[in-house]
Image (tube, rainbow, N blue to C red; front, side, top):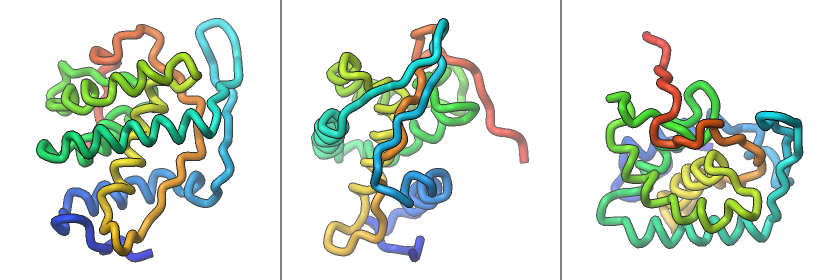
Amino acid sequence: RNIEAPCPNDSPTMKLCLAFLFALCPSSMATSKLHHHPVSSASERKLQTVSSATLASAKADILVVLEDNRNIRIAPKFVRLGFHDCVGGCDGCVDLANPDNNGLDIPIDAIEHVYQTYAADGLSRADTWALAAFTAAEDSQDPVNPQFTFPFTEIGRVDCPSGDYKGGPDRHLPPG
């Protein structure tokens, strides 16, 4: 597919975000089947189980957040949050004291109620942030001629053990 596909406002940032998601997640785009992965908890291995209906409802709620926050351009912020969360492992934690993460409190706060709504159904904060990134990238395309789909098929990310999702591990991208 052509990564130069038009995005609203022909945004170079959104093109970069789409390229990031396309490059990062090729295995999840190759299939529409939902995969549950065994994950480690502090004391045991278990299987995260999240229904397709829960994911569809969470995605619908994220689309509402996107629509309600278009004035602050929340979509690229969700993609950025997904990227920064996954540096060193997608765990639903970012260190807001790290200057590289400046401004990530905005998408974190905007999406927190979606996480709170579906946490009891097994959706981790890390999965919620990843779903928000995928949904934002998909929703930011030309609605008449979308070029990409980002099916969310991989679940089971484990949240950071500390529970301090805004003060998570200080991870940096490698230099260069």
